[in-house]
Image 1: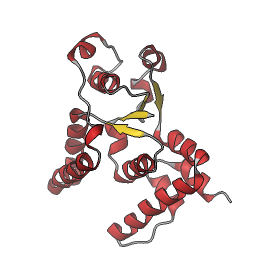
Image 2: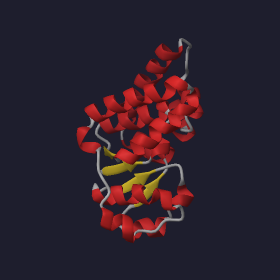
Image 3: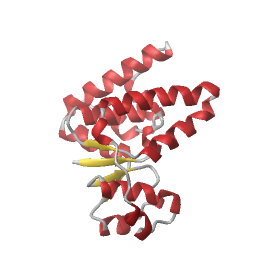
Length: 181
């Protein structure tokens, strides 16, 4: 299953790493566009002068690891599509160009289900999607989250419990699932 990842799920880091870990575990094939990657780099400027440089480095690693994920929207799709926020039309057009089955976003109101279904797409927020992956493959998702948690500890120099890390990353349903016996 191909899923187009909106900027808001690629940045912040923990959410991105869990999503891409799930992709690496075979749950889905990720897609994104050059504009989405550029929006990520620009959003990282909020972290300070080095934020954009770090983001561009992460983007370079991401595109090297997933070269087939980059899709470009077609001009004809850009011209014919409508969304409540015209700045999001490129996401829908790129998802169509990449033959995605769905769009993963936290911006539900910007991607009406009816409009997406007309294009053969569904919308999912990352927490619901990842919880579904956990239900389908709990051991795989536990391994994904443990790798992300371990890396967060290494980078921050402080201990993290998986549930707290996921809650902070706006993935509380996945965190609760992991905590269940």
